[in-house]
Image 1 (tube, rainbow, N blue to C red):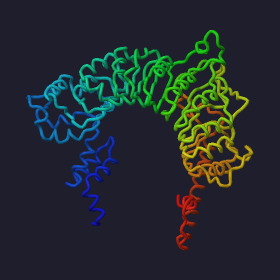
Image 2 (cartoon, rainbow, N blue to C red):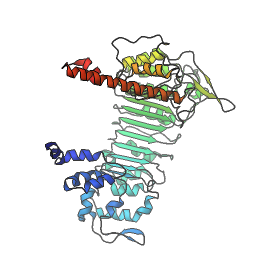
Image 3 (cartoon, one colour):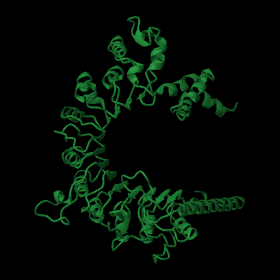
Image 4 (cartoon, rainbow, N blue to C red):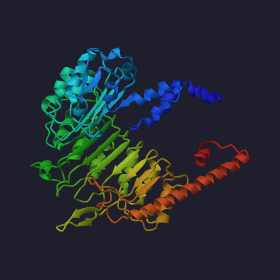
Length: 532
């Protein structure tokens, strides 16, 4: 055995890091590693018990927990802390992910409420799982009983999906667990039922909350007050337009960095325009959201994503140019996703791409689901396309490649990627943008797959995924209503890109071997071009 192998085997931290990569739904590999030898036992068990999907395995470590006529119960009054086997594994748990649907039957059948309450009584003031940090429920069933059983002052994250108002009362939960207000930093609540004002008021009192994700019905009433949420950094709202606007207008946090807004309803154009303003002069819903964020999070906002989950009003239109101008002062923006479907044509030009590249030098993800050809259904259910007067060309793509050095994912609509037709020439010192890995080009046609591959490879030499179809917001089918682009043509383009990438890699290896034989030492950009 080499010295390096001994160093790894007798270093518990390195072993824990290795076993951390084996964590997942299936724990067979970790169990096998824990049973291999004494050296692996402790680090492997830490990973084995770190994330649990049920409390039943722990109860089986308590001898007094038996099943009488198919009903689990306790036969003595000893607390769980008096059982060494239970304590040895309970201290390893950091996350509970309770998914009753995955087990095929409700949690109530696995563990009756009386058994839960009895266990909570037996444990006393000491938490069952001292290192527990994260709680996740995939159903609203038995939430209060299980939180009463599992929660302890160290929990910082809680997610409740598919909640039901008749089964979950956030205000009563906070009355039982006062530490939740001051310790919780992340909260996720998603469901199709309303959150009552008492529950919203309880959420607003969580002073330490940094991440809030809410998914609510379109007509859910807004917060009465948001004065307590002053530390929020991440906001993910799926709700009606009135709820979203009220939240953004009244939030007092000065640390907003990540904002995702998904609107469930639509407002007719005459509501937005008002009595005295015309439709063209009145700001749209998304313009008002951008205006508020520019005012409140100009220096902190890093990611901004918007999406319409329902079809817009037939007379509504989205003007991206004026929308983007509101975001240009936010120079630290790293992600922008715009997923609004406008029935009227959306105008974007190469100049707009130039302005974006100048305003957001640190942009990493730019997804603009704004086709310059907008499909509209006719009376027979078919789609017809109408295009605007101006639309971007491959010149805009070249501008993004030259100036957005950190961009990794790009999604937009272009009519063509032929650089020759765009009448542009790349600078002689431009060797391509190595950061971009994923590219979608909407309804862009492929005239010649080989020349298209060469053009894209000259712009983005490390491109891994390319497609000519971009999904419309709210559509489950990525190919639906995507113009005349053919997926098979873009598959051919991607194959050509893979071949070009392999040829370049082989050529770099050949040049590198020649330089090593000649003992030539390269530095700076020349070394990066050959060895990276």
